[in-house]
Image (cartoon, rainbow, N blue to C red; front, side, top):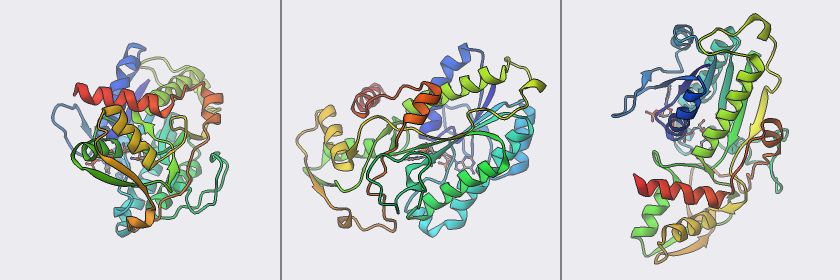
Length: 316
Ligand SMILES: NC(=O)c1ccc[n+]([C@@H]2O[C@H](COP(=O)([O-])OP(=O)(O)OC[C@H]3O[C@@H](n4cnc5c(N)ncnc54)[C@H](OP(=O)(O)O)[C@@H]3O)[C@@H](O)[C@H]2O)c1
């Protein structure tokens, strides 16, 4: 398959670049796109808010699958940039859906646990539960999901949570830095979820891509055959994070412990000690039964993945 990756210079996009190596040997070809050049990374320029540009690149490269790693991800910033967030998180994914529908391909889109938050859930959230976002970011991501579904394209929307990686800015890297440099730190314990190592998510995305390829019998460098015109049987919403449950406080304690930075006195605190324009979900653990049962995706325990990421960071 020819696979277009958008937002390829972000956290998840960079992990997609890593897993692409194995997919390459299986005969798949990747086109990595983003809005800015980054030194050392081969990137084709594509602004996904531009529908005609998206359609043109899909045609030019005979694209059969799109992995959308691009988004407006600044949760607090979205509160004062609603139009931009809506454009990038809702209209742009619709553009991708419209373009991929024309060629009968698959859109893998990434959404968020922040579609939940206003709901008093206290057991892991399944895909069927109603989401009531508490802020603009979550609301625009929910709109994105709805717009993709409304196009009628083949899609898998994967909601994930608490993403971290070796790349870009994220909680893990921030806490590695703070626990190494501060004598004491307060971290909230009243928001509970599960961290997700972006490399694990990228691997899960590859499983989905392989499954689509198998079902549609797409041969390398060929167009999707007529016979594969029916809807992809696994179109729908899925949840993926690592296994287990923790608070941001527990996450920080584990980051400090794994990296050996135990001098810093990390203490639990309440969310109201960190005033923010957006109320974060107090409980947004994702139930991953559906993605495991449907695709046979393996989900590592969050502590095991955190160890791998910190090891990989040391090698950089
Ligand atoms: N981060 C989390 O904790 C988290 C949690 C749950 C779900 N998610 C979801 O996971 C996905 C990946 O997140 P991430 O953390 O990897 O995101 P990220 O690091 O912020 O990367 C997003 C990428 O998209 C690019 N981009 C911005 N505007 C664009 C446009 N108009 N066209 C094409 N690309 C554009 C960005 O470029 P610039 O940097 O130059 O703007 C950036 O390279 C997103 O859908 C996000 O909503 C993230």
